Length: 120
Image (tube, rainbow, N blue to C red; front, side):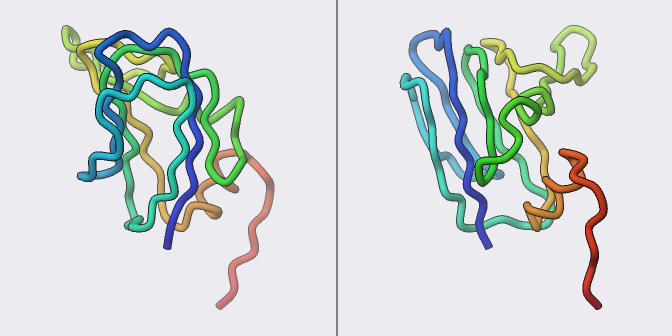
């Protein structure tokens, strides 16, 4: 199965961003303001990650979550080793968003869409 991610940035510092998913590198030295990707190999627990310096202005999966998902990403403070949620990507940290597969079930729960009926 797959996931469709669109992410928008501002204030990207040179030499650019490194963007990845799980162990896969998706973009190296990325300097544009929008990154769109269809990820074909999702597993049960996934991590979308960014290295570099920027501000994430919008993050959606299948067009959902534009004002909420960007705040669910996190980084680890190098001094305190505490993980904290942010949409600012610091130059020496890895920003990451952990999500579950199937994506629509995770989005439904995360974005508080209400009851989701499971079929048995």
